[in-house]
Image (cartoon, rainbow, N blue to C red; front, side):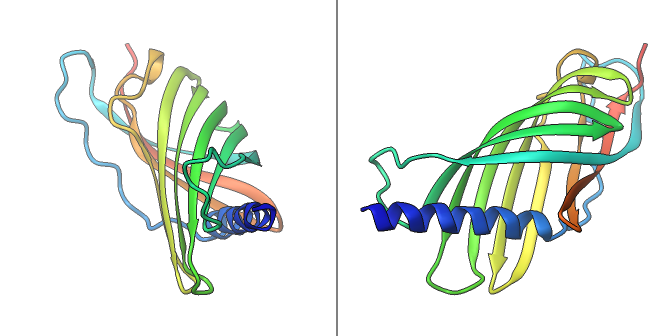
Amino acid sequence: MKKQRRSAVGISAILCLAFVVGSAAQTQPQPLASNPSQKGTAMPAHATGTFEVKLTPQAPDGKFEDATLGRMTIDKQIHGDLEATSKGTMLTAGTDVKGSAGYVAIERVTGSVHGRAGTFVLQHTGTMNRGAYQLSITVVPDSGTGQLLGLTGEFNITIAGGKHSYDFEYTLPEAH
């Protein structure tokens, strides 16, 4: 049992590092649909910066005693055009094939993007197919609050020289 737990933690840590190293496929944000609670014209924008992330492996909950499955908490400090913190949860799955795995995660971001404050939720979906990465991190529709109401977009991660950076392509209704 102890060996399985160590394996799950090790697989989870490798998966997390592997997925954030791979860059996400470039997807353009979709235009906002008409919504009576949103005012103004949708304005596409671009935010960049850096972040620090702490991933904390969680003990198995008794339901999944499989060494290939893992769970972690996410705690980020985000700097740059997006000044924020985030908290979330990640689920990982490894396989017997070297370089093949998957993960999903949800994180709530609290802060401001280009001076507009509020919260929003990011949804992660990542796979690694024998070493080939595919990663998508998308703003959950209608998750924006405060001045970020109506936010849509794609969040891309890069790691270079051990440093994490982001490129956030987003659309937000004009402020009034």
